[in-house]
Amino acid sequence: FPHQITLWRYSLRKRGKMASSIASSNLSTFSVADGIVQKSARQQTLRGAAKPTCRAAPLRAVSGRSSARASVTSGANWGGQIKAASLRNRHIAKAASEDEPAAEAEAAEVEVVESSGVAIVPAVISIAVGLVTKFLVPCPATLTAQAWSLLAIFLSTVTGLVLKPLPVGAWAFLSVTFTILTGTLSFGNAFAALTNEVIWLIVVATFFARAFVKTGFGDRLALFFVKLFGKNTLSLAYGLQAAEMAICPAMPSTTARAGGVFVPIINSLDKRTRSYLIAQQLQGGNNTSSILLTAAAQNFLCIKLAEELGVVFTNPFNQWFMAASVPCLLAIAATPYIMYLVDPPEVKDTPEAPIKAAEMLKAKGGLTSLETKMIAGLGVTVALWVFGAQLGVSAVLAAMIGMSILLTTGVLTWNDALEESGAWDTLFWFAILIGMSAQLNALGVVSWLSASVSSILTAANLGWMSAFACLHLGYYMLHYLFASQTAHVGALFGAFLGMMLAAGVPGTLAALTLAFNTNLFGGMTHFASGQSAVYFGAGYIELSTLWKQGAYMGVVNFLIWGIAGMAWWKVIGLW
View 1 (cartoon, rainbow, N blue to C red):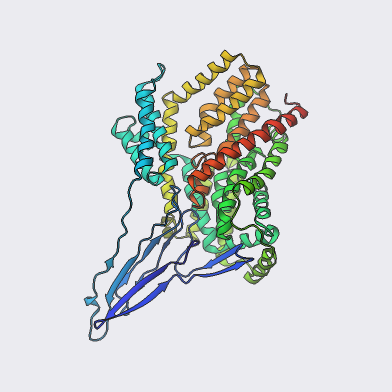
View 2: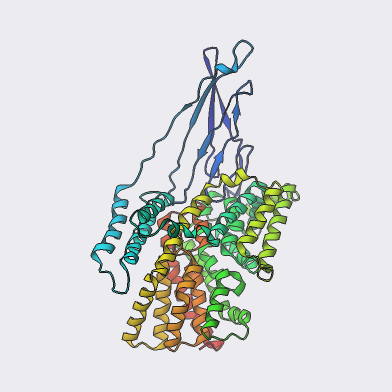
């Protein structure tokens, strides 16, 4: 485990006497500059990139016939709970000998730790939010009772995800069960999002992260970054942001970059830095996704929808980069420092780290066979991400092809994938949230909210710049109802762009800034985007902390993009 050394107790009784031996995971840990780099070498265990999960290999009795498997799960779960769930199995068996057959081995004696169940106060508050919405807030005439009921359930679900009466997956399960029980949604509609490509991209990206750890390539990359930027935690954060800017043109998926590259790198670093590095990478990645048209998949969708509404782009790639460059670079520069001040890491100065990291890189030598195979598999995936549009290969299919290569070459086994319980947990709860969001849109709730905002702006008789600011704020805040950036674009981008054009906002300015805004809310909640779910699933950020960081970094981004951005856009002639 990255968090602790886990011991399994295996007891053998022979001829009435108890002899105990401790079977450990044979962890060896060393640190560089008071722990800026940590490497764990294991015989029986591997770190999961999303949820630390370890399964010990079978422990066999002397005869080799009897075996017992100990399984321990520890660390952070996908509901944001950092409580360790420790389950210790005690296996007692008689050793086989010439005069004592192995068949006389006694059954294993298991000590079970009982769960505390639901937290009453958070559960009551979460349910009360839904009941108040359903029964005390009047349903608008333009909405059906079904739509209003679903909105009430959705608000109750989101409240529960924040207050944590149960882990995220369990609370989502209760919510979807109630939704089907009350007839608000059919079973098919409730689980329709299980085929969503973004969710499966998250799952496969988590497997990539495991491959980084298993092969040791994550440690190698971590040492390289520490060598270049590891003098202190802040400079390391800037190094990670620079790395994301360097690879984003070739990986047009923020989710894939998060799960396939940066989570495993950060997992290889000192645990005292991980919470800060994960948080700043999530918030900084929102800006990185805006710097190039190719940096995120939803960017292409925004341009396509804008062109359908009559906005003309002479050269969308160049126009995008010119508009985004100055505010984006300023925001990327500000993010690590501001978060360093507000939510500082536990350890800050590590002056000896670069020297020792260089020494260890030299000691590691060249790439191993597993590392080479993994790089080849991920290389194919990245190539398909770059040229997939021309070949008709989607981002998720490219990831699946890469995963297939890792499986067939022996880099990963299917058991490796099964042990990534956090990935399968995300598949479940994220699908439920996306499904609810899609049904809210289909039932007209999102359209009603947009129309309400539009009527307020019209009654206020605002000028185009005031309307521009208000619509951006509304577009951003409405993402609290969405669990996907792509879904948000599909539901609201056209409507809000149309309102901006009707208010007199210049077309190119309106389209590009709405697209930038789409990237900026990717870290506002733990379900705001695929990458947000991946970073949250790494287990180093409390749920309430992530929401807080999403809120104050949202303010920072609005100030930078709103002030420096508007000035820059004036210079280049967008208004």
